[in-house]
Length: 129
Image 1 (cartoon, helix red, strand yellow):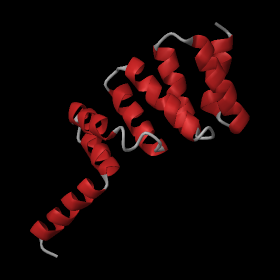
Image 2 (tube, one colour; image 1 turned 180 degrees about the vertical axis):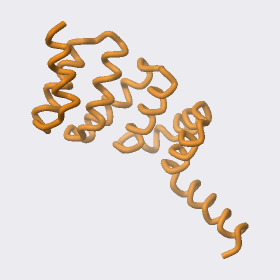
Image 3 (cartoon, helix red, strand yellow; image 1 turned 60 degrees about the vertical axis):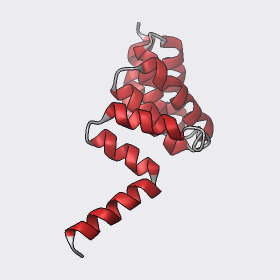
Image 4 (cartoon, helix red, strand yellow; image 1 turned 60 degrees about the horizontal axis):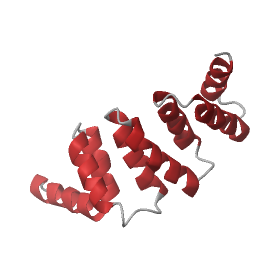
């Protein structure tokens, strides 16, 4: 397959799979473009856990924890056993000085995954404050 055809196939794939396009934009450091593109798709993907996770991550990357939180909360509603979402949600709560919410997330993580040392360490640290 020649390079031009391969590039076209890749681009078509990115447009057919918008979550991939957002991930690629984020990977390439095009955060504002990724967020703008994602916001335009939000109504179509409002019940998609991965989309909500990606958008929450995008806002967290640009240090906008306040805008990231609703996406992580929605992702958690859609899959309340995703430890990765819960860890990021914990970090968002910490960035917003919401210690009680962060504690709650850590406790839930350790319930789901008792061997999760990151959550356990953070829980001990937060309980000691």
